[in-house]
Amino acid sequence: MKAFKRLCIAALTIFLLFWAILNILIILQKKNADGQYRVEAKRLADELAETGSFASDRYPHITGLYTGSDLYKSDAPYVIIEANGTLYRAEYTLGNQNGMLIAVNCVLAVLCLLMCAIFSYVWKNIIKPFGRLTDVPQELARGNLAVPLDEEKSRFFGRFTWGVNLLREKIEDDRQKELSLQRDKKLLLLSLSHDIKTPLSAIKLNAKALAKGIYSDEETCRGAAESINARADEIERFVSEITRAASEDFMRFEVARGEAFLSRIVAKISARYAPQLSLSGTEFCIREFDDCILSCDADRLAECLQNLMENAIKYGDGKRIEIVFDKVDGCELITVVNSGCTLDEKELTQIFGSFHRGGNADKVPGNGLGLFICKRLMSLMGGEVYAEIQDGCFCVTLVVKLA
Image (cartoon, rainbow, N blue to C red):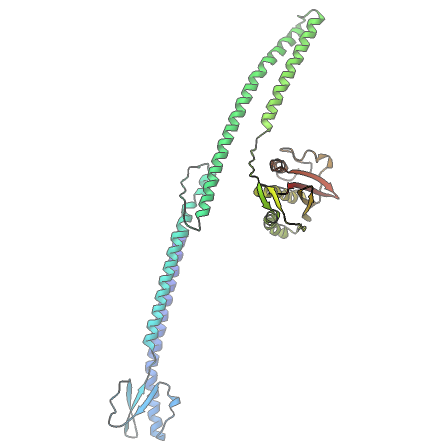
């Protein structure tokens, strides 16, 4: 904001300086014109004295030459000259210098007011609203979701502030969901831990009894062993529940089913990745396709394609990435293909699991969630995703239902 004020002051200072210089130049020109008519009048008198006549086109400032009894009677500006003992009235013109000076100053004054009005408008509608928003991202990053953010009616920032408020509400909602999820899981784990103690105690008692030879007959020993086995099965069931609770719903997905044109989704992907891949020297090709209406969540489908593109960039050899299309049984097949696949074909059945990373990901940063997210989102949209390796290329296909 201070920088904008300095910019306004500098711009106005330069404009006023230009205004002053222009006025000085016009005044100097006027003074020069004032002396010009005298020079021409002197030259005219000399020519009359020598030849008795004169050429009017040689004296642009002299408008007329008169003599006689009405020598001093004229409403026009004039100067008296003498030639061969005769007095002449030489009328002259200076041009409308004062009028030009007034006109120039009026134009500059209007421009100055217009400049001030523009600066005022930019300050009121852009700079000040933006100044109120500068601290919001930092506060949100710190976790302060109660940072004040007034709604802006300005067409420049109204949509932005509305979006930031939606983002803040989404973060708050996600935080509450996360807290609720963590609380539920903690309660579940505590409950299961408590439930495990009962069969575990029975196992320990039976095991000690068998170890000390308390059970003398074979039938009693067999019953103790069967009890241990039953309690072990019970513990195994509890462990399965703990594993399931720890693995499911660690990420929550929301899908808004609707309809979207395939061309719009493809255009979004192309706009995002074509410049990047061009700079890196990767051949990026989007094959021809028939535009159609897909039954999906457009944003989520675009997210899936982005995940596939990111994987293709990270795990491919950087030579070629292409997107191909096909239609099968009322579904649109969108396949992202990257060259240079080094993944073992035996791992294809595991790559859609959460936190799974293939054998080709040792030196590539990541968390193993991209394909897992794709599978969950496509499932929620009523579609599917599968992967295959063809001719040394890694191909991942999204199956999207047609509307």
